[in-house]
Image (tube, rainbow, N blue to C red; front, side, top):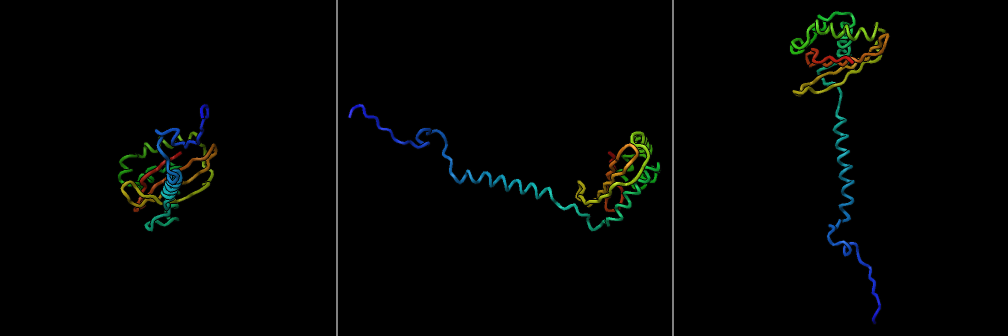
Length: 161
């Protein structure tokens, strides 16, 4: 039979023999592996922020309010006395006063505390820390104070924003 053309259905593999063959199970594994990876990341981010047993929440919040009250009143030496030896070396009352003058010039007079929250964290060395975030309202805006305490209730960190 001359002139007859025979057409057969070729598979994708036959049309492109150099393309690696994909197993159906591999297509299903990729989304599954991505889902598991996302779940692990979410769980790692949701680690406990509960205060360690060494801290009492109300005591930590009261100490943080004292720090902020001292800053507002200009009692910088009192705040320095509440700090750990490492913080006392790094921050002087004069430096603290200069920073507060700059902040006070932008914010005006203190009005009220808007919120106070305490959470637990681990220090870089693995020790228990309490971190208190205080949002204070002033005439011209809010200031957020973040104050970290070590297990001896010494101030280990003080940030103002």
